[in-house]
Amino acid sequence: MSNEDVAGWVSKYPDRLVGVAAVNVLRPVEAVRELRRCVRDRGFKALRILPWLWNLPSNDRHFYPLYAECVDLGVPVCLQVGHTGPMCPSDPGRPIPYVDEIALDFPDLVIVGGHIGYPWTNEMIALATKYPNVYIDTSAYKAKRYPQELVAFMKGGGRKKVLFGSNYPMLMPKAALDGFEDLGLDEEAANLFLHENARRVFRLQ
Image (cartoon, rainbow, N blue to C red; front, top):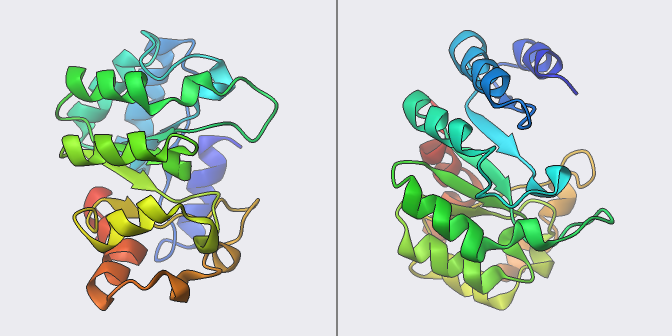
């Protein structure tokens, strides 16, 4: 789907949707210009990159101009982390060393690691603990399938570090919340997870 398709849906439901840009990372100059256009002209709130789609680790040089532009624009980059659902190599989704190096090279870059990093979830938790601007989202996982170490992180020191995600249209939001009540989150942790963390990270009104 194109960025213009996304902009069209957002314009129809501006009180419910915000745009996240996608670009051709193999053409860095064009990619930076498209990201800039989406954020400045269309009001998009983030950049989405799937390293497995390009079979490139997230610290590859093709991505670095985009990370720098995200910093200048003040928007997060949303990276897929963890293994791949499609029949593609999973190595590009490793949190360590790839996301670790990005966070070191771009300390002002806000990084949201999607898909909880499984089977390297503990690595993502370590990075979210280590770096102020690294976060985790739970997209593509039902609540009843969250690893226990992630749930413990959400209840404790990581309550401001984990964002709810579905994986629409592959996993609908209602289905993604299956088992949520059984997680045992207190009211503050639940509110942070379901909306307040996203509101803060993506600078939503």
